[in-house]
Image 1: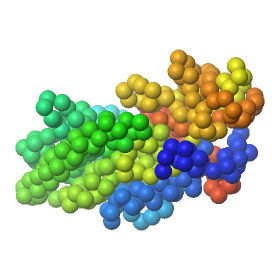
Image 2 (image 1 turned 120 degrees about the vertical axis):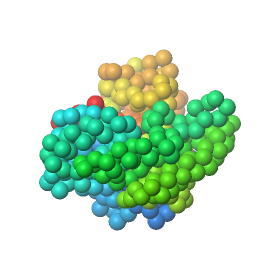
Image 3 (image 1 turned 135 degrees about the horizontal axis):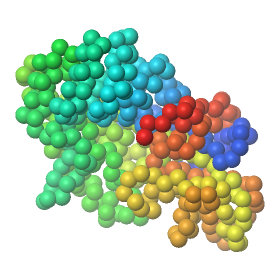
Image 4 (image 1 turned 30 degrees about the horizontal axis):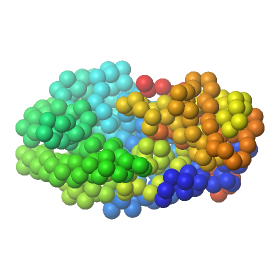
Length: 405
């Protein structure tokens, strides 16, 4: 699916339904037809393994719950903040895995209280200080916290670090040391390990117009895959040989589902961004997605022939700064941001080529965010549409009054 076909897949009837239902402009829209198509792609690439939802890439409780009902293999969620985990547990979401370690004592106390009520929560750790904080919170409420150990899956080639700077746990010995510390505590229990191969899941390998760079990235990815699979399997084997029982081994992300599903040591995958299909996820060879989470800006000025200035739009994605972090105008087709202005805090000009149908103040230009869940931080709700009809408004985390940093 090329970019024009992908962006054109955001159907006219769903755009019109969203506009009719929106309380005002700008607004964000969630196309459930596209969302469910993307969910099918995630399932196709995941083999027969269960898939955990990465909530940082969704940030909408109703979207999370909707996806969990689509197929039995969508099981559980991975959260990015302990207060988020607590809020989701209180909202009725079960089987929550923290994707990142925490030393937040009030949040740990809140989670310990929920654990005492029988809620399912697994904390992430890669250091003794995190274990001690979890142990203290658990001891105070006389509960036992389940722990997942985060294993570093990055690679190094000729002095080049390929991956992200996350966990310090790279060897069997370092993992076993923490696992043994967990075993000695009456308030902690080892539940699983996570080996997230960010350099495979989060680096595009089929960027339009960058054939040579994409080929080089695919080559480095293939080299890294062998190392990742061997390290993850060796650590899992070492833990089991020392008598540590693992309920799960988590791995993968939206950009590495096929590879991670083939790893016999992995029992479950994680996906998030693939469901919304932000613009950065156009550049993956394995993924055939449709934009599901989009936003519409009103044209408020005609600055010059073919240049239409919209209200708002400066929703820049996190990560290394660059043009690929800017929102992308997708409808009407053919629009481009001005290179010296980009997307502005209050206004965003969009240029259309000669011969394009003229726009007037009050018309809408539709955009995709570069990343997935960050769009939900800009809007209080998604207008949810399906098959040409609005089915309701779904509160984002911001609309719930939640802010987790």
